Image (cartoon, rainbow, N blue to C red; front, side, top):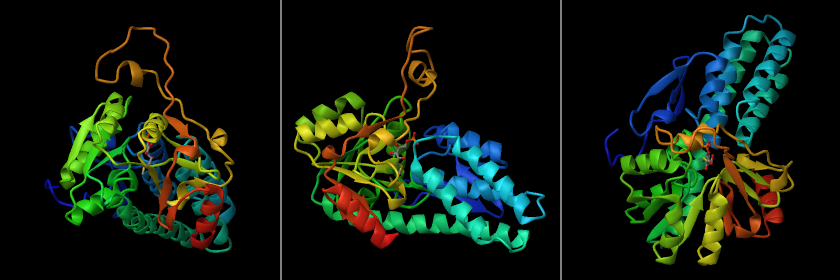
Length: 355
Ligand code: MRU
């Protein structure tokens, strides 16, 4: 893709019967598209963050289930359903925090059960159609998130973001948190994006900086420990981040470091916005305490820059996400509209109306 072109190719797609992903672990050094040929490869691609970002993970498991089902030798509904359940449980074990993964598996599971009594071949095609629908709907949701968030940032000269919640995290043209900023760029409104590097795996520098540069959005990369200074210097008038799971009281699980950014924003009187589709809201989680936080390999912390940056044998704690309490969130930007406190009422009303 040429620099300045507004749209990146979809990071997850079903192409002539093949599941193809943009291998995000290779960015920004190489742009590699990779075919996933079986369930083990899908599981591994999710676990290793070759495909990552809550909505993109949801789309991938939808197609991943299709990959296994289309190759299945089952010749009865019962056999197919038993295989489906085993495969879904396996994919569900790849990463615990992003609720979109479980949401997409539920949708696929409902589809199989709805088609009970139909021929196995028909069920297979029905599943593929459902996976396509999840992806198509996601494009539309992200566009609406971009439009709903745009009025909140269009007067800003600078906006800070953490991690990567852009097109490649959603297999769509706008992403979630980056959507309003990409829309501003497309409308000729210059908003500078300050992208946190996002240790330990640098999704901000490897992915957000890369994709905004490709699109032509003005972006300044900063180390995570620069956010406070950037705010104190008056460089940003809003913070915009994505989400992996939102509890019904408005507590938000997102990439580790988000909580700290939210506290800094509050201290500096800067609005803190969380963008995400309503499929990222988990109404079975009463609060952040109900959200499972993934812990990852210590090597991500000790060898993060391609060489050891800590002594051998050092103890490490490496949670991949944190929970930002609802009281730090100014508003949620969803496809269904902007939700302001009190979140319990707002989230319920908007999602009941639009789901
Ligand atoms: O570990 P990752 O890279 O999958 O974490 C991703 C995030 O925390 C994103 O902010 C979130 O999934 C939203 S993506 C639109």
